[in-house]
Length: 178
Image (cartoon, rainbow, N blue to C red; front, top):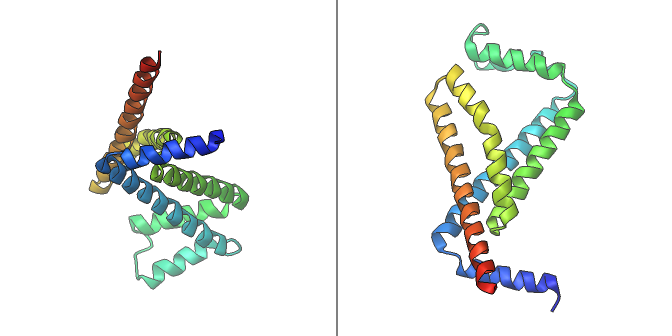
């Protein structure tokens, strides 16, 4: 049997032996990450469809369609970001979106199949957002910011604990073989 076949057989056996609560939690996180990746892909496709349009004009049309006050907080923010996007290199946006989507979908795949690299990827990529989420909460306090921060903290903490447990099992197995 080849090394790859041995690894796959051992991994399949470990997956069957994995406690169902842990499996359900990892798969829930995987689904959440996949949804984020698909939504980011849809957003990127939407931005691509607006590539050769005046985004400020489109934003004003949307504001008018919803009968919003253009001087309000959210319409002003929409206009601000329309101006920013008009001045942004579209290829840089496409590259960033492709990278983000790829990372989210790869993480979802790896978590679904309980792969250690996916736990590392999820913990590290989630931890990268924490300072930004804390800053956003301090600058714009809102219950949704609290929920996003708490959700991300829970995912990062859970994946960190899983990595620690995986390491403990690895060390225990290495010690029993000597």
